[in-house]
Image 1 (cartoon, helix red, strand yellow):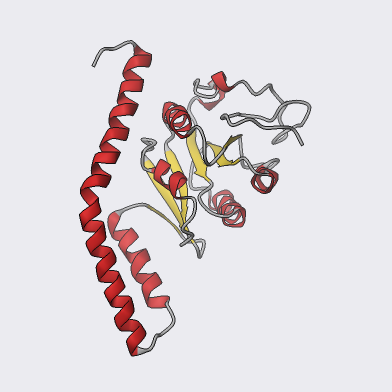
Image 2: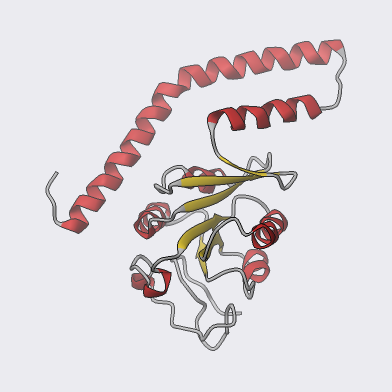
Length: 225
């Protein structure tokens, strides 16, 4: 197994073939550049925000349903043997970009934003993990966010549709005793109150992220703010 660094790469280091295409050297500086072969194609980014089994099932659904015309699929996955082994060689994919969960978040986000993806595919399966990658989906500037839930159902993200997903999960929970229901309701109200209190701080944090990204874009373009 080749050693993969904590950078965005398009293809593993030779001589390992990937996706049935000739291998190329992994030059991180090439990642953010527009690729001629993507011209006129819909650029779809699949964010691994769930276990590989969910992602593979969704990829099969995308292949069968043909949601997009002439799509170019890129998967952004964890730099782990399980993830890489699951996605490498999949005929649906044009590229595989890897990341380490604990390092290089800003660099990854900047590079992905430069790609200007048409659609970001994410997974809301109830798994509390992958929260950083899920957040990426809303900061990439993609025109659409396609969501797959734990049942394999997919929909374009919208507030009403998201509320319907939460409501369905609550209905499907097993029945509880009266005391447990009271405790659960109390915790839910407390959690909602905490969210309201924390909301202004989350907004400021997202605003700072947006300002930092804009400053980076201005610096690269040579335009003074």
